[in-house]
Amino acid sequence: MAWTPKKTVGQMVAEAKQRIKELGIPELQRALAVKPGEPGAIQLLDIRDVRERQRLGFIPGAKHVPRGMLEFWLDPTSPYYQPGSIDPEKPIVLYCAAGGRSALAADVLREMGFPDVAHFEPGFNGWAKAGLPVEGAPAGGAPPPKGAKT
Image 1 (tube, one colour):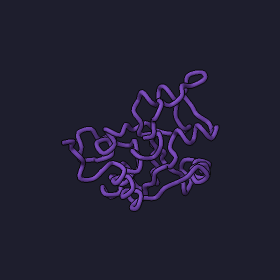
Image 2 (cartoon, rainbow, N blue to C red):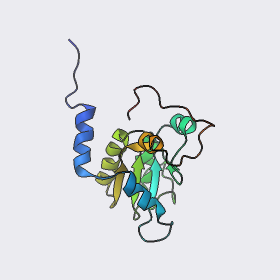
Image 3 (cartoon, one colour):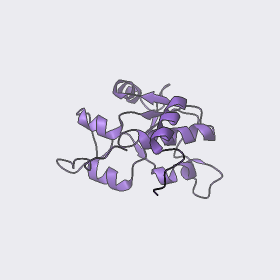
Image 4 (cartoon, rainbow, N blue to C red):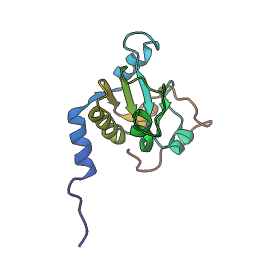
């Protein structure tokens, strides 16, 4: 008999999305138009794996904080804390490839007490597919892996 999870990843993402803010492409474009230091400026965090970022590039202005280290780098009680990298009092927007990992990660930061956290749906893949600017991609870029969603 095959094991089945008590709660599926799809259920977890759907539940997380009920508790967090979600930005679409127009909202993220407006937020990115605000200059750093001005009211409303965001901190855009790319939580994808380093290999995804190297292969496909990233949204201009995004800081790389891998999903596996997110909580550790942002928690001042952690031995892996990265002081000064992220301001907990300023808005944070997370993105991954398609929005699943970023929804879960935004929910975790909300639970940790970060006051203004959102995630970007449809993620990097949707941004790139819309023909919006991408930095750091090799010439021509590589397409996302077949079937890649999160």
